[in-house]
Amino acid sequence: MNRPAFYAALRQRGSGVFGTSLSQKQVEGVEAILDEAEKRGTSLFHLAAILAEAYHETGGQMQPVKETVYASSKDRNPPDAVVIARLEKAFKAGKLPWVKTPYWRDGWFGRGVIQLTHKANYDKFGVTKDSALDLKTSVRVMFDGMEKGLFTGRKLSDYDYMLFVEPPKPAFKYYASRAIVNGDMAVNGKKIDDYGRAFETALRAADYVPRFNIPTPKPEQPAKIEPQPMPDGNWLAKLLQALAALFKRK
Image 1 (cartoon, rainbow, N blue to C red):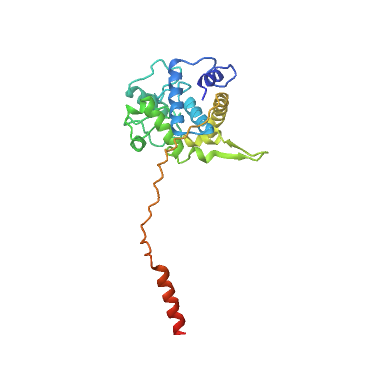
Image 2: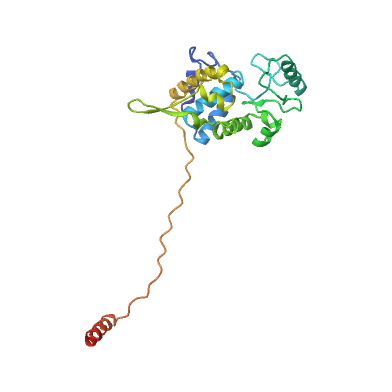
């Protein structure tokens, strides 16, 4: 993959993401995602969808954050009590209508590149409140969750399809793929579609081709041939005697 070409495509004014520049932190986040994708052999469409979700969930920061921390937030890592108070205020004001049971009160609010909530989900991915904010750990959680359907039950392969043109070619449903992370397609599906196509264009400009980890084949062992008893030198004479005895009986 030509990474300079990838970043050059992202920095174009009309790319649809990032504007014309990326900060060092944004680059570090993108690099961690690209490294994980190449290690796993992630397809171009799936990588574009993963980058789109990371871009949306972090407000373009590409770094793991706590819930209620936005791109415009000056405090990038507020105390847990501050986050809980913000969520409580929003909940009481009716701004979180999809929440039936406040999950933040015991501190298991959203953390990461993809916001991981509820203690059961932290346990599912084997992370703590602190490790969920580690970049490499959070990227691993994002890939596992989106590839295996561990966030909502939906996974990346659910949205692959073929365009029936001549010749047929693969494509991806970015809009609908928002359901992998959250069911708010009506609100955010169009954004994910726009971001996914922007990252797809940049990946194509970089000639991205997934590198699969193909195990080294083991050397073939020579076939084991069991030794057979060698016929003795009188085999022909014995055969003639047997034939003679057969005809004599007749």
